[in-house]
Amino acid sequence: MASNKHGGWKNFDRYSEYRYLLAIAALSILYTGGQAWRQVLSIWKNNNILEQRISAMLDFFGDQMVAYLLISSTSAAIPLTNNMREGQDNIFTDASASALSMSFFAFLSLALSAMVSGYKLSTQSYI
Image (cartoon, rainbow, N blue to C red; front, side, top):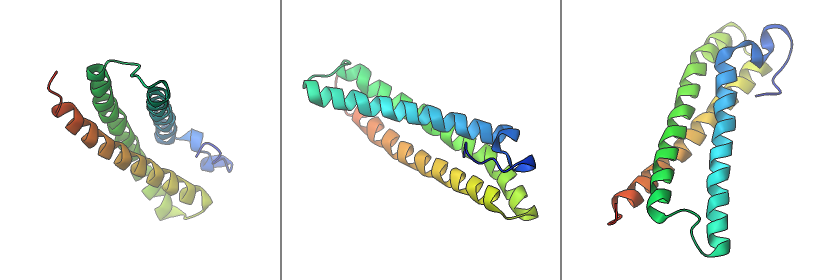
C-alpha cells in the first residue's frame, strides 16, 4: 500500500483513511513481532521473561486492542475504496482492495488469537 503512488488522485497518501490503514498495519506488525520475539526468547532461555499472570493479561488485552484497531482501520477505508471502484477500476483501486483484504485477514488472525488468550486467561487459577 505504501508504494501505491501513481500520480494525482492515485496516491495513497492523499487519503487519511489509507494513511490510517497503513499506520495501524505497521503497529500490528510491531506488536505481533514483539509477541513472537517474546515467545522465542521464552523458549530459547527456558524461562518466562514476564510473570505468567502478566503475560496472559498482556496477550489478551494486546490482542484485543490491536484487533480492534485493525478492524476500525479496515472499516474506515472500505467506503472510500468502494466509491473509487464505482468510478474507475484500475491498479490503484485493486491495490487498495487487496490492502483492505490483508488488513481484514490480519484482524481475523488476531481475533482468533484473542479468543485463545482469553481462554488461557480465564482458566488460570491465580488471577
